[in-house]
Amino acid sequence: MTTPNSRQRLGRLLDVALLAWGASSAVALLANGINDVRQAPGWPRWLELTYLVGVLLAVPALLVAYWAKSRLKQLGAVLDDEQTAATHTRSMAAALVGVLCVQLPFFFHVEIASVAQAKFTVAAALVTYGAARLWLNRDA
Amino acid sequence: MSPTAAAHPLRNRIKVERARHNLTQEQLADLVGVTRKTINTVETGRFVPSTILALRLAKALHITVEELFYLADEQ
Image (cartoon, rainbow over all chains, first blue to last red; front, side):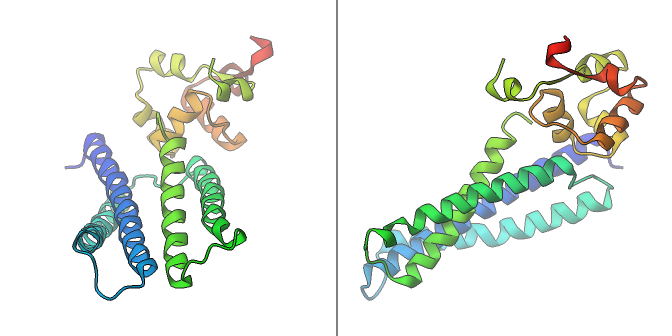
């Protein structure tokens, strides 16, 4: 039998899984980007380990988030409403600012390999979007 | 008063009415078909609800919208 408490727990699990997915994906992308910037053959062990931990956390976290979301839908929980839409819009605006900040080195003629720049850009978007959502939902 | 609350002149009596009806935020959210976070952010004045949501909240709490929501300078 499902209770409001079990739905609340599932909701929290979804939040945590999404946070874990975003953070670990960003870490994996950053590690990959840093390795690209090095422009040296092979990976330093600590960087490779960071990258692997990021990937190994991101994949199951995404699967858990997918499962929790579909389960919540089955239970008839409301996942999206006008407040979540407003939070999403404001977080997207914050993510855009984050992405623009990562492009700043380009304007100061700092050379960064474009393959690394792309990874840093996506990582910045994930981090600023997630941070903005956390901030906007800080007490909720 | 928080800077956010100061920016929005809309005040509400959701917390009082919830207590009067012995409802949790989760139960009220279920009644009006929104998330618990929405009830929380409306209640604390960080989110200004749409007219539709304001009407639904008032109906769920058995009072009028004007009784539930009011402007800060009308306090």
